[in-house]
Length: 369
Ligand code: IPM
Ligand code: MG
Image (cartoon, protein in one colour):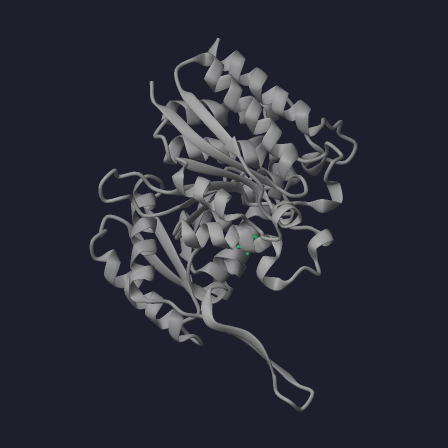
């Protein structure tokens, strides 16, 4: 039996609480005896800053590079609002993405049938929704240089961020989008702002060129602002949306809210396959953040974190049956009416973070009995 190695980086806020629930799921799979996971754990974000003065230590980075996959909780919180910019909690996550070269960020937005009423949109608009936002994650304005604030000497300052994309970066994310579309609805919508941005012009051009190798997939282009509008108007028109780092950050939050709760959505960040082993570096994390306002209360929803592990089973280890089983267990717990606070309707009874974790493990037992 192959042993898969995982680095757990719980981080800050609700990160540690939701990671505890994933550990229950890992223990369940290990006890079942058909797969084996070995875990190590380290600090990231504010927790790492408090311990080492850095948002991630070099030792933790080395572990992340060596592990088969990384499970990441969340980082940040008001406690670290005034730490220097270079060592702010988010820098740990950005370093992981950059150093591991995780250029492809998969953010599915699925509306669980039990939750169609929890969306701020009408149930018929979101029922059965299943879209995938593919966000470019290692380029664009979050990383481009120069990136600075300079004093102009007249009491004014000047802030610069730089949006840069080279064609190879666009080409590889476009190909990833077409490949993913082939396993789903067969359609890709590419979003950029070619009407005002040079990087949008190049994006559009390179995606169109790459499409020549994927003629079985339908390609459509949309300006990113119109795309945002269409996402809330009629989201079911989309299958795979491919877009840059900044637009992907925003549009994936919008898409997440369509489904009823940000607390439900997982994500996968993947690198290119290693030419020798075929293995990809990978990090899995919930789309939601560290939610410092509810940290420590047992109120967090662990589903996005657990569903992130399901994506890990699917994309890092090709354990498709196990991934399906875990996703079914999540749905089954929801179908029974179990709700953490974030997904409860007014007046509905709620359960705690650990009760939700236990319920999902109980469904795993029930489904595999
Ligand atoms: C996300 C987050 C991050 C980002 C932050 C925490 C740096 O918003 O993963 O979407 O902007 O990429
Ligand atoms: Mg974001």
